Length: 265
Image (cartoon, rainbow, N blue to C red; front, side, top):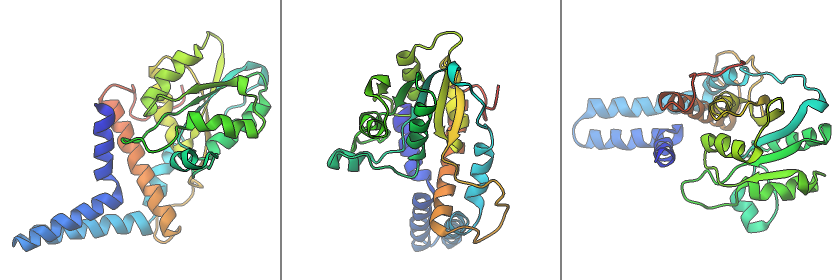
């Protein structure tokens, strides 16, 4: 139920859809002679879209998330495994064409292939089923073997988890498959903005991991202003930032993580 509610809520709450909804409701209010309400809603829609597209709002939402964890120095002999969270592959395209097309979070899998070479004895656990409410594509865990094998990772090193639909399930299902032992070091590879929520959930699941953030979307020094990035990137950053902060709040309020903003231990 949590999964379904979260998907429906986010469909409404993401900036573009919320803007459209505010405009439609505002126009209906104006047509019903509630002009003050209608004008207020349309103005709010314009402000939301303007800030999302032409300001540094998105970068400033993402920066504190991306700066929360830094990559550690890890010696090769201490790494037992690497967990990479899905979300970096184009599931619907890969299902149709049988390839391994990457999306904007594809750095997760590129870095995993690099780490696999750096730590040749580490197991590679790919966690990622379909995160869509209506299944339309191939899961990342099903596509990843083709990509990682092409990049030189031996298939026998892979552990595949293709049932998870969100990060909470990523953490719980990964622990069940990895069966981490006391004293083992497992790296967690995911997007830097996604790392605080991921670490909080893995801790809650009893799976101690070492964060290895990738896929940075900000330089960390954008400041505040307008027209500091192209409109598409600004909109995407705002959408990601709002989604991640809402996710942190929702997981904290429902007891799935112990801190609103998990940080280094």
